[in-house]
Length: 449
Length: 188
Image 1: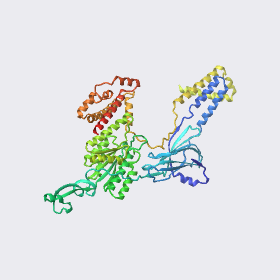
Image 2: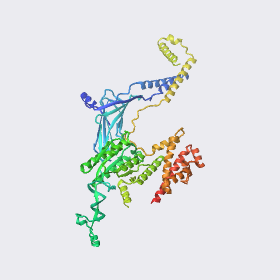
Image 3: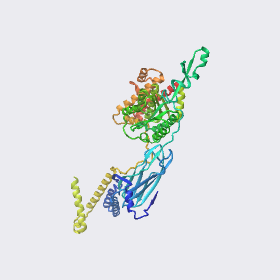
Image 4: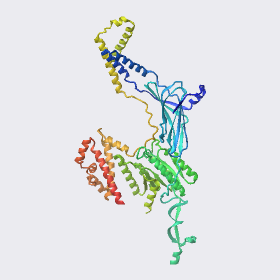
């Protein structure tokens, strides 16, 4: 923290230019009541002094009267501040520390005898070094600067208005002002997409060749069936052993491998912003991280992948392939407002959302649905998408806690929902402590048994 | 009542000011012990009244919050705990909440019994209704139609000043959890 005087006295025009860079809104003005009761104490002292005939007490009461006058003097001054805010890195990696410097200058004519300035750190960021606030007195033209470090996390974070609290010298009156620089700092943090191993996909798929084994016979690697020889079948697929044994010509059919169309659906309703501990990572973060791994793994495998969010804010990236699509997917997962690190607060209309989602979803697409499954709505949506002929795999980060009765009840209900889904033929994977790829590998080995 | 008092006060202050200038008025006032003591007592009473009024007023100050911390995530079930707390508290009402939560627990219990005991849903329903689904009498009493809590629980509820419902709910969730674990072990 440093306070410097204004070195140049003739900065009149610059002051006017500065004033346009900060917007100020008075939020409230109150009487703090800090000196309430002094009046009563003074009067009582004088009274006791008179009754007891003790001039000393009367004199002491007069001191109290002095305080009463002191408390009444002066209004809370207007926070005539010009604030600038700079972040050391506008595009940090997740986990990086970003140093934010805030400078506030008193551009008014009156001194601010008691100023507290609290910066509007974005709700998705955590300050790791130093408080994001300062308490000082500022004479006209003086500047105060302070800095703090915030740990970057996924998403696009824009700073909110800083809060300035000014008081009169005695602290009896107080004015709260929102001080908003016209150019608030903003950081964009885009995590790299790390491939999370092989993703278990179900059934079929598109007409393009790819890596998904299908139940369609044709050209491929794995044996599927044999059938009667037809003219034109390639010679290398003729079953010569059988020809030697029985004298009949037969053709071996191999499993055709095709590409799948997959839509990664991330639950971003307000209920999904839940975690087993208030300070822990939310289910939305876990889902987005896992979706990123799935996105990369599927694209690498030659599948067409899209992204959608289940939430009040619309988010849709149509299935596609290629490098440009990979970059778009990475950006969508990192910075789309629908997948923001904190809930938007808008209302969510389920049937409207479902109608729009079905209209957009390609007929042959399957859905990987990332949801914490802590309410019935998520399970019901999974079943409804499944019922419309799209194969659904539910991937569920476990964010339930097991402390209180209510938490345990919700945990049991979630487990029951997973069982229900599995019994209706929807594949479901959950992961908690272990990483997402480990859970997928475990589940895949169970399915193929 | 207030107006005459205010008029009296204004008059008294005016007389006081006049007395400062005109000594004749001051001499007219009776400076006897009784009058002075009376004025002093009045001062003490008023002072105490002011001080008392201040005690009832809340001091206000702007609260800038805690912007340094990340917005806290909600813990699944925390709102349910609050609802249970309210429904079992001393305040009246909360009957509907209690019934809703009991229904949710019953559904879980039936599902757990179906899996754990390998019986049909109807049988499981009946077992839960009669309280024969678990060895824990408190859990059984929580969901059973006609069964009462054990005396031990009743006494504990009275001593701790909490509702029997809470004890029953916790016992039922414990019992379901145990049944679930037995079931998943059997699956393995």
